Image (cartoon, rainbow, N blue to C red; front, side, top):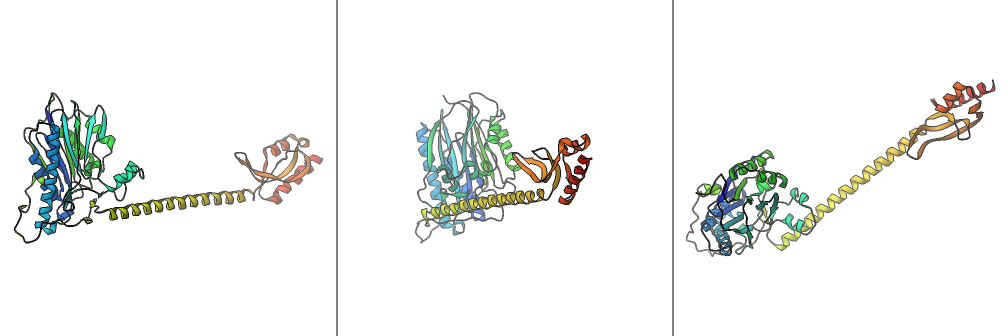
Length: 417
């Protein structure tokens, strides 16, 4: 049986970006987040075009399978519209966008995903990422070459392998259907949130009894507290039988899609063919903030993998050199320390019970003695007066070897009296 939706959508430009290239939508049954790439060349335009086109799919469906097909079709249509826009506006070449979207149909949800925005499900106290990042580092994680923790700080973490844009006429889009149940809380977000806020903090925020809008605001604040180097967009959907809070009576659009486009996306007459540009690398290097890239071909992927292997080799070499330096430093410290101890002398009782000159110091390093008998006299410690006997047994420090021999001579004279 279908249950009411409670949802919210929030977007923030962040602390470094000069414009918001994210777009979000929370409708009656459709929920979308798009993260544009292309910097000032059109990242905001790309996400806005995609969300404006995809939100046309916000209607009732007879089944989740029908909704899944509609979502896939909407994303492909958005991809075509982006390519047409670049064709008519060459200055936008290289723009693209990630898209993570879902449609609620009764007790099921149809999902579609491309890029590195994410879809999470919080259920029964556990947070699960249900989408898979289409990034270079995710391939490294999947192949076991790096860990999730290493992926968070990997220098190529923003290299996208799949996006909507002018690079592929038929992009590969992940679609699937999942069951829902009352109490589920769904989160769709751009990497401006998932890239800076840890999973345990996401889970803590989603576990609260706050309304979706309060939770969305809290997550955005956490990103801002962490520096917010990128735009942040959050869409929250609650599955609940009866609960206080928002019900999506009116759709909410946030981010760049909430503002009018600065140019018309209608096709203009042209004599050029409608052929898409060939696959290519579009590095985006804004003055500040993280950068999105789009990987274009297997050759480039091989190049990235080789570069990562070189980076791993350099890191291992650095660690090896560091370990060698530390070991050498320890060995030198031990050698110099031992040499210093052997420049010291004291008078004490030898194992045979005679007064002797010892070279070294009285301390031991575990089972290793730092002193040894240098010269042994014929004087028995037991024949010395009580006071002198105690001094010898406790050892008598000497400034040098000559001083130690002088002490032994004095003790010899005492024993003969």
